[in-house]
Length: 437
Image 1: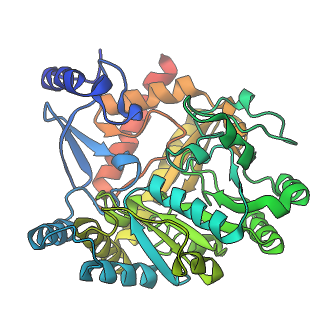
Image 2: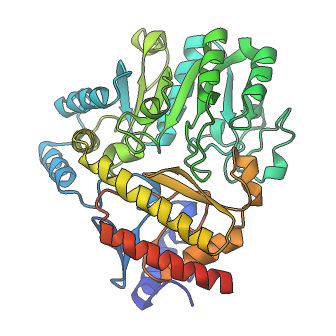
Image 3: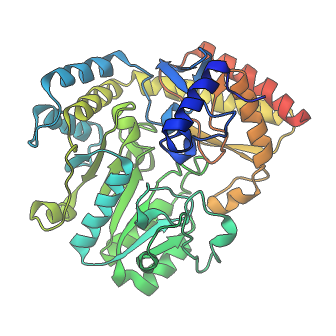
């Protein structure tokens, strides 16, 4: 029996007739009987077309941090709509939003707004290449940086066996349609392997324009950097004149209001923010410090976009970050997320399931297997079948994580202690069902 009720099934039939495979993003298709069609969201909950309520730990792959339909964001967006949204000039709300981002992330000197995380990483790469006069970009296996050609190598969609040896990894394309020449300027490395990074910089340091890294793996179970790893990458970039770019599309404004630099104590040259920046409204930013910003100030390195800094996006960003700066929302996520991490681990331990709970309270994942993974390659031994049986049983009971274990859980701040208790009860029931199955 699938997840769809009769009205959801009818809506998905309409979706298949109008949208390719019934979706506007490939990862949203869970099959003909299990793909959900959502009617609305409210606070910590989603409601499908049949009116069934789910406690939402998907939250749109992480953007919704304050809760669905948060009043302050809704009011800010509605006011911006009434005033007009796109002017082809800098607007007051854009300035206010940028000032608020700088207040939240003190290392940022200046920024520019764009619309999506994909656009942010694309612009950051071009800025780093234009500034350094170099072509090579280094990324890490299991990191996902969006949907443009330069970053679709060795992503969480890549089979581990395609990655080559740890000593000399092979960039594995995630999709057809990337020109053959792109791979010549891409290098991939295992995450948390500082020795591999040192070898690469020793061999090619003069060609490397940028190192692009998710400081915590938002698409590989929430794996965190080991002590010294980010510090070591920072040192290598400084020694060789490369630009360090943090992809904080998922971690930014979620694991701390100041993002990864606040949590891990390492400051990049550029950072890409999106998702939680706007509580679900499409908005992103490329933020930076130091000489690399001269590449934009003096012109000649393209960054543009009709909708960059539009009124709705920046109004949402200003309202969201202002709310996060008050502290209550992230404190709530810290408390309730900790309860979820500790509670689920206790249930797994009580049943003798070898598993690790990874990440941080506002963004955590599960590895079902022996030991604790340090990089994407280590996740190959994860018990995917058991995890999928568990999560699908949870979804049938009204608790909605992503069935793909590589995708962390993303609670939002509208969650209550009662929701946590319900989630733990459902987790326990679903785990028993999954183990019996």
